[in-house]
Length: 150
Image (cartoon, rainbow, N blue to C red; front, top):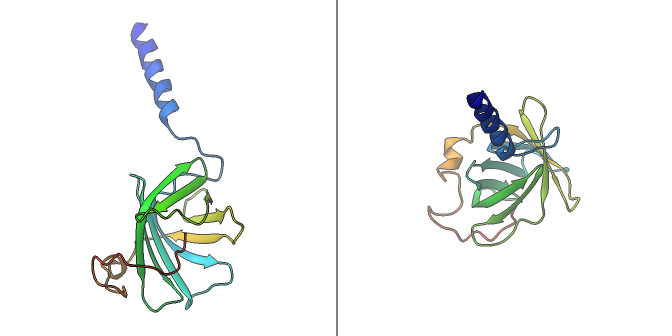
């Protein structure tokens, strides 16, 4: 009887530690490729983002340029709300609400500033982007000063 009570307490205790997500939301952790954002299409913007479970992110963007820029930093998620800060201390432009279909094949980020939803598909980020091969800067160069997507 005592063993059953301890097991029940342990199980209920674990549930308290699990994050709570509203219906249609969930953790943003994963690798994502932007498939739509406002009226921007194919040739004007290409964005990949990786949210790691440890609260870090890597953003690879080609927005109005011919090469990819890499930004990184940290993020927090509280329910469906996601906020972040770039590694140079610059906060994201706003908070985002993350929504997912049941199969988590897509993620929609809705910005709190009303600038328009961005929709992402779950993908593996290509090696040539991760390696910096398609970057306009030298390896280790953190002097990015252009438009930041988030």
